Length: 252
Ligand code: BEZ
Image 1 (cartoon, rainbow, N blue to C red):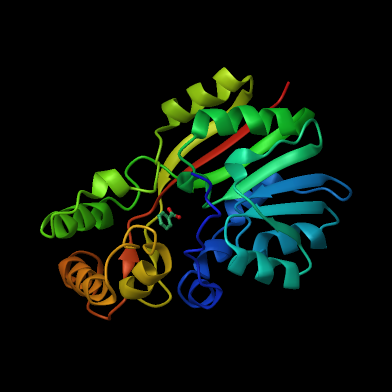
Image 2: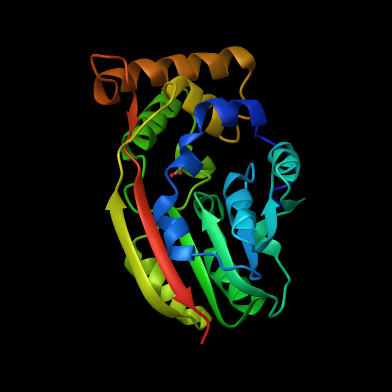
C-alpha cells in the first residue's frame, strides 16, 4: 500500500513530543558531512529540521515524506519537500548522497528500497542512514503486543516497523550493489521531552487507526500504566529503549 493514502502524523504533536529526533542526529549528520553544491535526497524528511541544516551547509536538498502535515513544515523551513512514499522513488543517477534519519524502519520493502536508492545515486554517491535496529523499543512492543492481545488484536499483523540486525542490513545493501563502509547497532536509551502518552499519540495512530476514540484512549491508558514501572523514573522522566542502526554505504 502507498504510505501516503492516509496522514497519521500531526505536525504539532511531532514538534512537542518528538523534537529529540533531530536534536540527537549529530552522529548521522557527521557521517553525511554535507558539502556545498551537493544534491542530497532526504528519505522521510519529516519536518525538515535536518534538511534545513544541510541547506545551511550549501547542499541542495530534496525531501520526501509520506506526511503532508510534516512536508508543509519542511517547506516552511525552505526545504524542497514533496509528499510521497520513499519506497517508490524513481530517480536515476541524480544524487551525491541519499540520507535518512529515523524513517527507514517505517518502510517494509527494504530490499526494493535499497535497489531504488542505488539507482538514484551517482556513481561514488553515498547512502547514510540512522534507523531503529534489532531490539528497538522492545519494552514498548511487548506492552503493545500484550495489551492489544487482551482486546483480541494481533499486534504482529499490524506491526508497521522493521528493525533489522546489522547482518541483515549489510546483506541487503550488498545485494543491491553497495560497498558497505560501516553498519553497526548501538543502544541509545532516550529520555522523552514529554511522556510516553505523547509518544503513543505521535507514533501509534497507524496501529490503532480502526479503534473507536474510547478504545484507543483505553489502550493508551493501559500502555502508560504497564510501562510506568519499567521506563519512568522517580522524577517522572520517561526513557524509551531505542536501539540505533547506523550505516554508510557507497555506490562503487
Ligand atoms: C524510532 O525512531 O526508532 C521509532 C520512532 C517511533 C516509532 C518507532 C520507532
